[in-house]
Image (cartoon, rainbow, N blue to C red; front, top):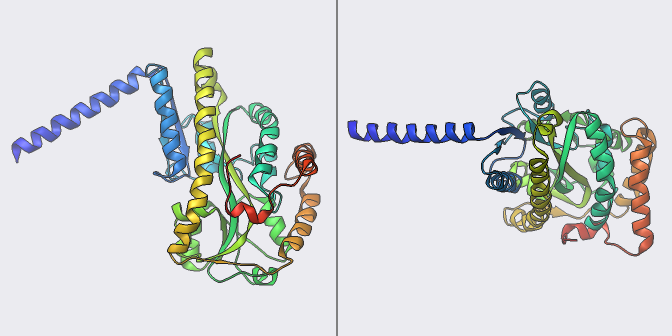
Length: 350
């Protein structure tokens, strides 16, 4: 036993020394937090990104990730970033929109009909987003994706009337979803993402919104066993760094970080869409029911979307941001037929 303890102590000492050496060897260290669970495609791909940056910088750049919300929700992460406890994070669209309100514009419910449309609008808005985040003292590194989100509930929701009877969740600090639901006659219950599963378990809410893959990794599907098979909206996020920290990198290293991020986060979007597609079968095999909504629900929802936009444009997001997105969408649709919202059930890479 004594010998075993000696071996364990020796091994632990070596590991600690190696860890200390690695940290000491890194001239530029970035602590990054995320709500994404450890083991998810988002965290796995971030590790690949961090590994490549470390290798190509000969260990001079280090990214350490704190996943699963252990640093708190988006607002807590941002506060820690501002005081130097963190140097960046993977933020959700709603969680960082208090800092850059225009970033929530793509989350408008029933806005997109396909990933092809998402790609065009996202690419058109990235320069605009970069400028807005830079003005807020943040370096916009890459956009991330959750994917098309669906209405998920403990009982089937086939119509607007069904939704009106529900205890629906809306993300805290998300005026777009809250206003849209209010226009449908629903009073939503605001909660941060880490609080949703517990609220489903206790019955505080019975209707939530998530991507198919997201419902699995966050375990929401264990309670919300019915999915209305029409995409409710599109969810995404962003990888940001503190600009002051990022500006300390030599130009060659700043370019390395950006080029590596472009590579890995583009691959991440492809992986996320594949994971969402594969999750449909996983959910069905676990007993989750995909239910067909009543005809007319899309038309009514789009009418309420337009009403919501009129109420929020110039407030929750600027008219400029919305007009850029709407113009790209209009040009895309005028250019020819694209996939309908039903086609988002089996997204393909574009």
